[in-house]
Image 1 (cartoon, rainbow, N blue to C red):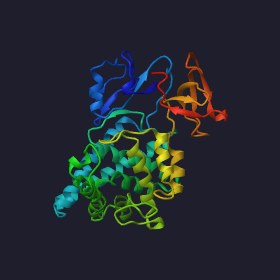
Image 2: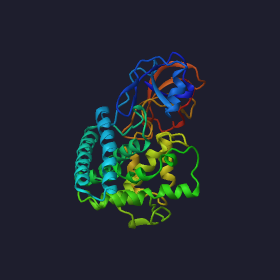
Image 3: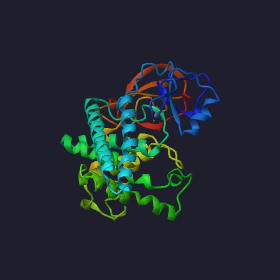
Image 4: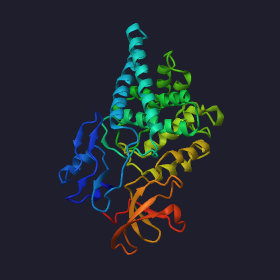
Length: 368
């Protein structure tokens, strides 16, 4: 199967993967034929790309980074957990509130152990594009994605599992303070005003204040919420910390946070592809982000995931068919069109063995 921009679909194309909601319910099943009236509905939910199955992409495998059932369980845990922790803060730590928060923390820890186990078993590079979903709550989905990226980055750091789980929990709870931010600001179409931005920025301190009061949560986890918008050159917030003043956990979470933010559609900005997200991290390397963490993150993710349509510097077009573990930026391409864009009998070309060839255009429209 392959990934296509929803604006470039053609009638008769069939879905290669189902489109799901946050509860794992199938909204459009695999194999459904796309028709004109479905496209506006998908756009309404910020679905900008879809996987289709056709003859030229037959056999190209798109692997989920974590099982869909685990993703649904994790989203349910985050939704209930955020509410329980917020209720505790608002109820002035009464006994019932503390019991609810304890259950929430145990649920977070349990689901994150399962995520760590899944990522440890998964031999594929991270590809959170693999499932096309209609996201009904950006904050909860973002929190889950950031925890997955942060977990993989922590594993890449060679940290013990106890530390990996703490970082993952910190990443999962890093935006807890956004529960206190008005939804109209989080979902606003267009740039925030200076006053509105000041309100949104308070989520770091608000999340920290909730988390530091919960004795089951290590203070390092609370600092992921507090420091994930700090930048190594001191230009971040809320404290303007720099360099080693920023906790290592927060440095890991900030890389994961920004990457997921830019590679997912938001109310006021379209998503970029993984290689473009990585370019944004490298552009901020050693000024906004820890260079070592950015370099390690590059090894965690599928920069050019299977299913992407690409054009090479010699004019040939094809589909990424396999991730190349020996050379992350040089995948295996299934060539479908020659240098003058004529259809050819598809064949595989390993860019790792052809140093003179480079990817020039990603998501090229030649096949669409």
